[in-house]
Length: 127
Image 1 (cartoon, one colour):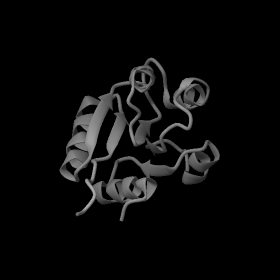
Image 2 (cartoon, rainbow, N blue to C red; image 1 turned 60 degrees about the horizontal axis):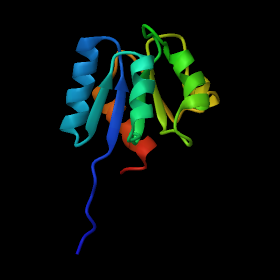
Image 3 (spheres, rainbow, N blue to C red; image 1 turned 180 degrees about the horizontal axis):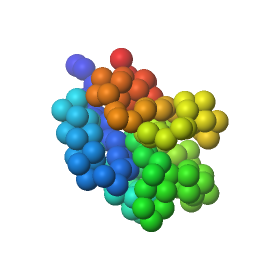
């Protein structure tokens, strides 16, 4: 008898509704469950309410609470250990910067669907 496979849940933190919908559709089509958030504060509130997702996909340029403040606050207030975080950004940030901030992954915007799925699976330890 094979063990029951559970679907991984990804918290998608993206303020652009069109981009959020596109990433959500891509991830759901690849077999992931998705919880959307429009800004960093909404994401922190969702994390506090639980259950914790398996991974966080974090845009950096957000209203209310941006990605930089989200990273600071999740260290202080979020679940510990917190889920792996994959940064998505079109800014000058780099993979090395993300790693130095304790993030598991990095995807440059505009997002290439295959690159995003590969990075998500890598960070989740999936083939």
